Image (cartoon, rainbow over all chains, first blue to last red; front, side, top):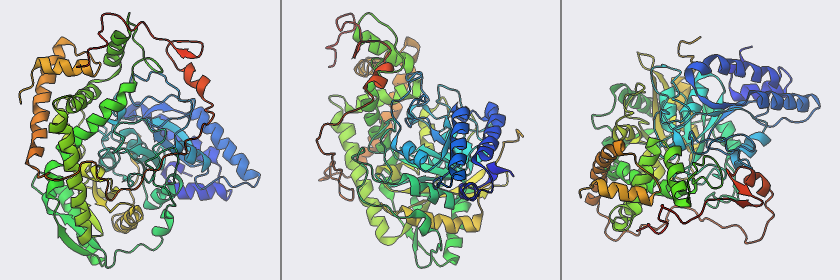
Length: 489
Length: 103
């Protein structure tokens, strides 16, 4: 059996029913990873031995009649900004060195408890700052659909791992599009849940008011399966919403869009959008209309005009504060110096890469005396306007259908020396984070050149299950994304 | 506003970063470009908006203020580049790097 092409739900049921073993599944996925990794560089730390030991423990549980859990024996990859006890966590940076966290992130605990087998920690733009996974201290990752192109970022390694068939599901984090943009570039599904739905405890912070953990998958049913595991209240994260969560797998059992209103944002079709992506949106809208949904025009002028500058003040400002903790005292890299301040300067300058330094400097500037009101405070006010604008838009529409990215995956090196052009890659995803909304990239197949196409759907806060229902309808029409080796195998 | 080399070096000092001489000019240009983008926000009507209003969000309850045994102290200390007993060890605060230079 070719396990690395299977859905997570099929793997879990096969292991549970004794049809095959977790050891066989994990062995097959590890072999796939080992064959492709020299070209893709999707992982910073493969965890082969640990994964085999966990798979064997799952098989032992099954053979003794115990339940292996809803993800029992399913191989997963997690982004390397999630703390894993005793396993190095680098955030794609030199500054953390070989730091081994003394605790697991809540999402890791939940995955482990559900029986998932973590086979590796994925490559990423340093501290999740980037859109191409080229800003990694561990070298760039490649896109499995076309290895000359970037996988997107910052969770590029997680997206590539799912697209290449290392694993059926992976976790990433999304601060301004870092799940949805790489999902679009690699041709898989990617969900950024509502801010506060999934615990951030143990996620190394980039911009705390924007960061959110979410899954990648090659099927909507797998997306629902993993959301049922990771979405739960956690008292250790004060921004995590108290109370219960919907059963996501229930929401996709009989998906229907009949009578629902789908908003199309005209400001986002302004001539700079790639033609194939624009057609993908139009075709998806036509299909939803044929399936009984009503297509309505909506307007988000302030999100379109101000989302990008607003984000690039708020996120760096929060980053400049969050990353102040990396000073060579308690963990990671230390560059010795005769006095403490010189040690801070040397350690941080040697440990942080160029893009992270740019953002720390931008954020420090926006928060500094004389500029706080003119930039940071103004950006917070604009953020409120964007939140209100989305709230009003959802009075007219149940979901918004829009692009995830303005372009198809770009070539490696194309924007590496032009950071502001790189930032434009997230122009359609950033406003969703500013408003704390759930957004999902849904794969809609490939263009004539074999590059991935997608759409983004956005829902009101806490309507994540509505996104999955829409995604299930789109997937039934467009088909589930397959895996690709980028011509390596 | 015009950002120059002096401003960028001042911000770098605040951020505890050193910018090597060959990267100063590109960083000045980056600042000039990104601030031009930031200035588009000045066109947004923000009159009367409370920037800290949290409507539509959810409450963020704090944990009970009760002491707990945190069992990872030794593990956390193990990761320190330099320590002495139960403490992180650092060089002297006094030196050529001016600790009061936070203006």
